Image 1 (cartoon, helix red, strand yellow):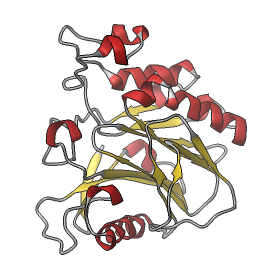
Image 2: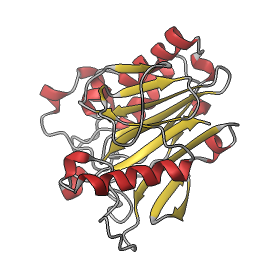
Image 3: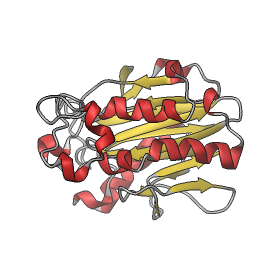
Length: 253
Protein backbone atom coordinates (compact mmCIF):
# COMPACT_ATOMS: atom_id res chain seq x y z
CA UNK A 1 0.00 0.00 0.00
CA UNK A 2 0.97 3.61 -0.39
CA UNK A 3 -0.50 6.81 1.02
CA UNK A 4 -0.94 10.41 -0.09
CA UNK A 5 -2.49 13.45 1.60
CA UNK A 6 -5.44 15.07 -0.12
CA UNK A 7 -8.05 17.51 1.23
CA UNK A 8 -6.80 16.93 4.79
CA UNK A 9 -7.32 13.21 4.53
CA UNK A 10 -4.85 10.36 4.34
CA UNK A 11 -5.67 8.37 1.24
CA UNK A 12 -4.31 4.79 1.20
CA UNK A 13 -4.33 2.67 -1.95
CA UNK A 14 -3.26 -0.77 -3.13
CA UNK A 15 -0.92 -0.60 -6.11
CA UNK A 16 -2.40 -3.77 -7.61
CA UNK A 17 -5.91 -2.28 -7.61
CA UNK A 18 -4.60 0.92 -9.19
CA UNK A 19 -3.68 -1.12 -12.28
CA UNK A 20 -7.29 -2.14 -12.99
CA UNK A 21 -8.85 0.13 -15.60
CA UNK A 22 -11.89 2.12 -14.54
CA UNK A 23 -11.53 1.19 -10.88
CA UNK A 24 -11.18 3.77 -8.11
CA UNK A 25 -10.60 2.91 -4.48
CA UNK A 26 -9.16 4.28 -1.30
CA UNK A 27 -8.94 3.89 2.45
CA UNK A 28 -9.46 7.26 4.07
CA UNK A 29 -8.25 8.06 7.56
CA UNK A 30 -7.83 11.17 9.68
CA UNK A 31 -5.03 13.64 9.06
CA UNK A 32 -4.36 14.68 12.64
CA UNK A 33 -2.05 17.45 11.45
CA UNK A 34 -5.02 19.34 9.99
CA UNK A 35 -7.45 21.59 11.84
CA UNK A 36 -10.67 21.36 9.90
CA UNK A 37 -13.60 23.55 11.04
CA UNK A 38 -15.87 20.50 10.72
CA UNK A 39 -13.75 18.51 13.18
CA UNK A 40 -11.77 15.30 12.69
CA UNK A 41 -12.42 13.08 9.71
CA UNK A 42 -15.38 10.83 10.40
CA UNK A 43 -18.05 9.19 8.22
CA UNK A 44 -20.36 7.89 10.97
CA UNK A 45 -23.58 9.67 11.94
CA UNK A 46 -23.50 7.70 15.22
CA UNK A 47 -20.29 9.35 16.45
CA UNK A 48 -21.91 12.41 18.03
CA UNK A 49 -20.65 14.95 15.51
CA UNK A 50 -23.10 17.42 13.92
CA UNK A 51 -24.77 15.79 10.92
CA UNK A 52 -23.57 18.50 8.55
CA UNK A 53 -19.95 17.91 9.59
CA UNK A 54 -20.26 14.21 8.78
CA UNK A 55 -21.90 15.06 5.47
CA UNK A 56 -19.00 17.36 4.59
CA UNK A 57 -16.53 14.51 5.06
CA UNK A 58 -18.73 12.08 3.10
CA UNK A 59 -19.02 14.54 0.23
CA UNK A 60 -15.29 15.19 0.29
CA UNK A 61 -14.60 11.44 0.07
CA UNK A 62 -16.83 11.28 -3.00
CA UNK A 63 -15.13 14.27 -4.63
CA UNK A 64 -11.69 12.77 -4.11
CA UNK A 65 -12.76 9.56 -5.87
CA UNK A 66 -14.85 11.29 -8.52
CA UNK A 67 -18.53 10.59 -7.76
CA UNK A 68 -21.34 12.09 -5.69
CA UNK A 69 -23.20 8.75 -5.62
CA UNK A 70 -21.76 7.38 -2.40
CA UNK A 71 -23.36 4.25 -0.96
CA UNK A 72 -23.21 3.76 2.82
CA UNK A 73 -24.68 0.84 4.75
CA UNK A 74 -26.33 0.47 8.12
CA UNK A 75 -23.69 -1.98 9.33
CA UNK A 76 -24.99 -4.37 11.99
CA UNK A 77 -22.28 -7.08 12.20
CA UNK A 78 -24.55 -9.46 10.30
CA UNK A 79 -24.23 -11.45 7.09
CA UNK A 80 -26.67 -9.73 4.74
CA UNK A 81 -25.26 -8.89 1.31
CA UNK A 82 -26.94 -6.01 -0.56
CA UNK A 83 -27.07 -6.30 -4.34
CA UNK A 84 -27.42 -2.90 -6.04
CA UNK A 85 -29.33 -2.77 -9.30
CA UNK A 86 -30.50 0.22 -11.30
CA UNK A 87 -33.11 1.25 -8.75
CA UNK A 88 -32.72 3.70 -5.89
CA UNK A 89 -31.08 7.05 -5.27
CA UNK A 90 -27.72 7.16 -3.57
CA UNK A 91 -25.79 9.95 -1.92
CA UNK A 92 -23.88 10.91 1.24
CA UNK A 93 -27.01 11.72 3.24
CA UNK A 94 -29.17 8.75 2.22
CA UNK A 95 -30.14 6.19 4.88
CA UNK A 96 -28.12 3.02 4.50
CA UNK A 97 -29.63 -0.42 3.96
CA UNK A 98 -29.24 -2.89 6.82
CA UNK A 99 -26.35 -4.95 5.47
CA UNK A 100 -22.65 -5.61 5.94
CA UNK A 101 -21.65 -6.17 2.33
CA UNK A 102 -22.66 -4.57 -0.95
CA UNK A 103 -22.17 -5.59 -4.59
CA UNK A 104 -22.80 -3.76 -7.84
CA UNK A 105 -22.05 -3.68 -11.53
CA UNK A 106 -23.32 -0.10 -11.79
CA UNK A 107 -20.89 2.56 -12.82
CA UNK A 108 -20.53 5.77 -10.86
CA UNK A 109 -21.34 4.19 -7.48
CA UNK A 110 -18.85 4.34 -4.61
CA UNK A 111 -19.37 1.51 -2.13
CA UNK A 112 -18.23 2.57 1.35
CA UNK A 113 -17.52 0.55 4.48
CA UNK A 114 -16.88 2.28 7.83
CA UNK A 115 -14.45 0.74 10.30
CA UNK A 116 -12.39 1.23 13.45
CA UNK A 117 -10.75 -2.22 13.93
CA UNK A 118 -13.02 -4.35 11.73
CA UNK A 119 -11.88 -5.38 8.27
CA UNK A 120 -13.01 -3.63 5.12
CA UNK A 121 -12.58 -6.12 2.29
CA UNK A 122 -12.71 -4.53 -1.15
CA UNK A 123 -13.35 -6.90 -4.07
CA UNK A 124 -13.28 -6.45 -7.82
CA UNK A 125 -13.99 -8.71 -10.77
CA UNK A 126 -12.03 -7.13 -13.65
CA UNK A 127 -13.60 -9.46 -16.24
CA UNK A 128 -17.30 -8.90 -15.44
CA UNK A 129 -16.73 -5.37 -14.09
CA UNK A 130 -18.26 -6.00 -10.67
CA UNK A 131 -17.18 -4.52 -7.34
CA UNK A 132 -18.01 -5.31 -3.72
CA UNK A 133 -17.15 -3.99 -0.29
CA UNK A 134 -17.46 -6.00 2.90
CA UNK A 135 -17.54 -5.15 6.61
CA UNK A 136 -16.13 -8.03 8.65
CA UNK A 137 -15.79 -7.81 12.40
CA UNK A 138 -15.34 -10.98 14.41
CA UNK A 139 -19.05 -11.78 14.08
CA UNK A 140 -18.82 -11.31 10.33
CA UNK A 141 -15.82 -13.61 10.23
CA UNK A 142 -17.72 -16.25 12.19
CA UNK A 143 -20.56 -15.94 9.63
CA UNK A 144 -18.03 -16.06 6.74
CA UNK A 145 -19.44 -12.91 5.18
CA UNK A 146 -16.37 -12.63 2.94
CA UNK A 147 -17.01 -16.04 1.41
CA UNK A 148 -20.75 -15.37 1.12
CA UNK A 149 -20.08 -12.15 -0.76
CA UNK A 150 -17.96 -14.02 -3.30
CA UNK A 151 -20.75 -16.57 -3.75
CA UNK A 152 -23.25 -13.72 -4.25
CA UNK A 153 -21.02 -12.15 -6.92
CA UNK A 154 -21.02 -15.49 -8.74
CA UNK A 155 -24.78 -15.94 -8.39
CA UNK A 156 -25.98 -12.47 -9.37
CA UNK A 157 -23.32 -11.30 -11.82
CA UNK A 158 -21.66 -14.41 -13.20
CA UNK A 159 -18.30 -13.68 -11.58
CA UNK A 160 -15.72 -16.43 -11.27
CA UNK A 161 -13.97 -16.50 -7.92
CA UNK A 162 -10.66 -17.20 -9.64
CA UNK A 163 -10.92 -13.81 -11.38
CA UNK A 164 -11.49 -11.77 -8.23
CA UNK A 165 -8.95 -9.48 -6.60
CA UNK A 166 -9.63 -8.91 -2.90
CA UNK A 167 -7.92 -6.37 -0.65
CA UNK A 168 -8.06 -6.45 3.16
CA UNK A 169 -7.60 -3.02 4.69
CA UNK A 170 -6.05 -1.90 7.98
CA UNK A 171 -7.75 -3.60 10.90
CA UNK A 172 -7.08 -5.26 14.25
CA UNK A 173 -4.01 -7.42 13.77
CA UNK A 174 -2.98 -10.76 15.28
CA UNK A 175 -0.81 -8.74 17.67
CA UNK A 176 -3.89 -7.18 19.31
CA UNK A 177 -6.98 -9.31 18.57
CA UNK A 178 -7.30 -10.83 22.04
CA UNK A 179 -10.49 -12.73 22.87
CA UNK A 180 -10.75 -13.62 26.54
CA UNK A 181 -14.05 -15.43 25.96
CA UNK A 182 -13.03 -17.09 22.72
CA UNK A 183 -14.48 -20.46 23.74
CA UNK A 184 -17.93 -18.89 23.86
CA UNK A 185 -17.62 -16.33 21.05
CA UNK A 186 -15.59 -18.08 18.36
CA UNK A 187 -16.03 -21.47 16.66
CA UNK A 188 -13.65 -24.28 17.39
CA UNK A 189 -12.39 -24.10 13.80
CA UNK A 190 -10.75 -20.77 14.67
CA UNK A 191 -8.54 -22.34 17.35
CA UNK A 192 -5.78 -22.96 14.84
CA UNK A 193 -5.46 -19.18 14.37
CA UNK A 194 -4.87 -18.53 18.08
CA UNK A 195 -1.52 -17.87 19.74
CA UNK A 196 -0.66 -18.68 23.36
CA UNK A 197 -2.13 -15.40 24.62
CA UNK A 198 -5.69 -15.78 23.26
CA UNK A 199 -4.98 -13.56 20.27
CA UNK A 200 -6.37 -14.51 16.86
CA UNK A 201 -5.14 -13.88 13.34
CA UNK A 202 -8.29 -12.63 11.60
CA UNK A 203 -6.25 -11.51 8.60
CA UNK A 204 -5.39 -15.13 7.91
CA UNK A 205 -8.92 -16.28 8.72
CA UNK A 206 -10.29 -13.99 6.00
CA UNK A 207 -7.61 -15.02 3.52
CA UNK A 208 -8.41 -18.70 4.11
CA UNK A 209 -12.15 -18.09 3.79
CA UNK A 210 -11.57 -16.39 0.46
CA UNK A 211 -9.32 -19.21 -0.74
CA UNK A 212 -11.94 -21.77 0.29
CA UNK A 213 -14.42 -20.30 -2.22
CA UNK A 214 -11.87 -20.20 -5.02
CA UNK A 215 -10.07 -16.85 -4.79
CA UNK A 216 -6.48 -17.33 -5.85
CA UNK A 217 -3.91 -16.71 -3.08
CA UNK A 218 -1.95 -14.27 -5.24
CA UNK A 219 -5.12 -12.17 -5.65
CA UNK A 220 -5.61 -11.69 -1.91
CA UNK A 221 -3.96 -8.41 -0.95
CA UNK A 222 -3.25 -7.57 2.68
CA UNK A 223 -2.36 -4.20 4.14
CA UNK A 224 -1.06 -5.92 7.29
CA UNK A 225 -1.50 -2.67 9.22
CA UNK A 226 -2.93 -3.03 12.72
CA UNK A 227 -5.29 -0.19 13.64
CA UNK A 228 -4.67 -0.48 17.36
CA UNK A 229 -0.90 -0.27 16.86
CA UNK A 230 -1.22 2.82 14.65
CA UNK A 231 -3.41 5.38 16.45
CA UNK A 232 -1.69 8.22 14.59
CA UNK A 233 -3.11 6.89 11.32
CA UNK A 234 -6.39 5.09 12.01
CA UNK A 235 -9.19 4.94 14.54
CA UNK A 236 -9.28 1.91 16.81
CA UNK A 237 -12.25 1.10 19.01
CA UNK A 238 -10.18 -1.27 21.12
CA UNK A 239 -7.35 1.14 21.50
CA UNK A 240 -9.21 4.44 21.82
CA UNK A 241 -12.86 3.52 22.56
CA UNK A 242 -13.71 6.05 19.87
CA UNK A 243 -17.05 6.27 18.04
CA UNK A 244 -15.30 7.88 15.04
CA UNK A 245 -14.90 5.82 11.88
CA UNK A 246 -12.52 5.87 8.94
CA UNK A 247 -13.68 4.47 5.61
CA UNK A 248 -12.81 2.25 2.67
CA UNK A 249 -14.42 2.95 -0.71
CA UNK A 250 -14.38 1.23 -4.10
CA UNK A 251 -16.21 1.83 -7.37
CA UNK A 252 -16.16 1.72 -11.16
CA UNK A 253 -16.35 5.00 -13.03
